[in-house]
Amino acid sequence: MMRTQTAAIYLALAGTLLWPASGTMAQAAPSATQVAQVAPDAAPATPQHSGRPLRRLRIYPRYEAEPDVYPRYYPGPNAVRDCTANYVEEYRPSGTVIVPRMHCFWRPG
Image (cartoon, rainbow, N blue to C red):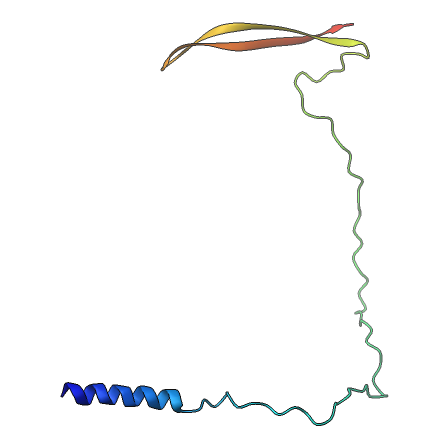
């Protein structure tokens, strides 16, 4: 019984491998080259517009805004930035740590 099933499987497998597929036939090369020609009565391809005029879009110039810095003021042409730096203790859940702090302001130069 086992030998007949094995033999049937081998025969089915051999039959599928030896059977020629329908799409595997080689194509023959064309004997003459064909050239496409435009019919003389064909009009050139131009876009056909409807009777409605096209919509006009207004384009406005892009003005570059100044960066948003608070406080927004002009300190003057000769202004100098004066900064003081120190260390401050901060109390955190992991423990007390020392962090740097900096405070700056503009002064006339």
